[in-house]
Length: 365
Image (cartoon, rainbow, N blue to C red):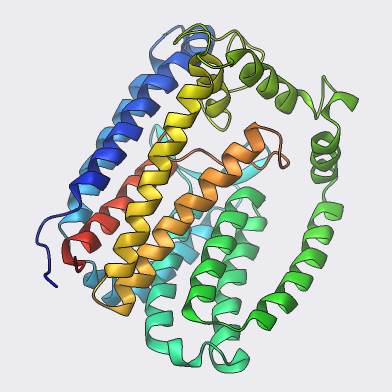
């Protein structure tokens, strides 16, 4: 066995390729909206290039910082993340978009604290699990303290409300806790409570009920709650095997709302077809494979859990986003990593994979 001193260049290449595809698709899916709203065909892609540039710099920065340093500051990072989640709830500080008070304005841009919380909680939980793994089979000593932490963060995110991001955070943390060795029956009990809680969340907000009914039968309200899902399927269907050609989407002409964000995969499917969608999924598959391999080969418990958490976060987010786009689950408002337009999401994703690349420098091969 030997220890590498170089990052996983295969993984690095996959990430850059995904980022390039994302930039191309953001322009292709957004230029109609950009010209209509801002009188600038390149409005969204210019900002995406800026976010990508900042994210790549962050990725390179984190790639060369020893990942063990994050364990030392995990408590401080978590406190800052919780503080931001509380700050965004203050009227006048948090910005409301799409019915959710999830952003804090910073000059001409804005940040989304819940994105920071995903990474911050992964770092802290990785420290907790690496130190307390021997207690994880005990509900009181291991499982319950981790659970309290995760659902406190989830509760603050739901106050915004942002069910999609909350789901990604909870599922990611549950994967980490499960791999650490928690008992199955703990998850069975948690699952039953989760179903009851999920039902209460849905019943407490009428718009969530309408999203469920729209998912089950979108054609019941084709101009209302079922509109996005129907238009997404109308985009993917005509794509066929080869697609209608890059830039030739019809659904981006004001049929599919904000096609450069959550539903960018629908535009990709329409323009590049089944083959284009398959290639994209293959790239994500390669990213996940290399990430899991890095997690397995990491030299210590903290590195293993940290790599697992980052990879799980990406896996969960991709699965939820694409499932929404093809109509398998209700609309959740989750971006597609590396492809969807967005500042905080893209930047934090690239910084996260920078940490993963740093772990790969120390992984045993």
